[in-house]
Image (tube, rainbow, N blue to C red; front, side, top):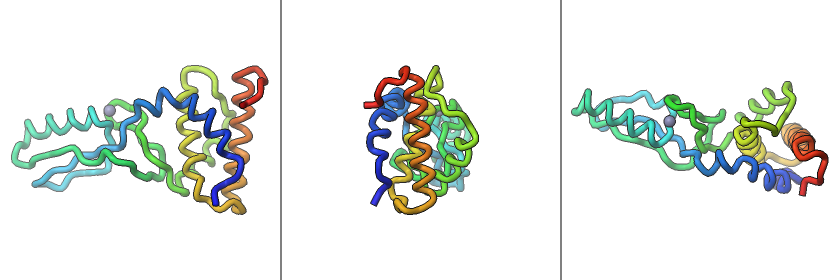
Length: 163
Ligand SMILES: [Zn+2]
């Protein structure tokens, strides 16, 4: 069912992404019992709590509360609109295509401070492609992306084997 040959890539990619994955909060948003809220903003848990407190201090009758906090799908990677933290969400097929469009124009690097963030994003892409039919063009693009990631991994580790 899923794209062949991605499992191994996901294992080492998950290792590099771990510092981000372990601290990433699920997507939260503002809600209120007595008002329509703009739920378009995504927050980490802490920033959402802070916003709820602020809003309830100003408008106690509206009874704001923190909503979300469970696994969600998104058409793009999600970040907290307050602190910029990477949020934990799965990418839809549309999201996978969009992200591949971006990375196909870029040189991939798994070096430096940004590596865990990039690895997390790359992991989301490959994980999001798991339900893609293996014979599709998108599956081919994902496999090509995985090969480029492996090459970047080898550059990071001086051409050692990937296992
Ligand atoms: Zn935040």
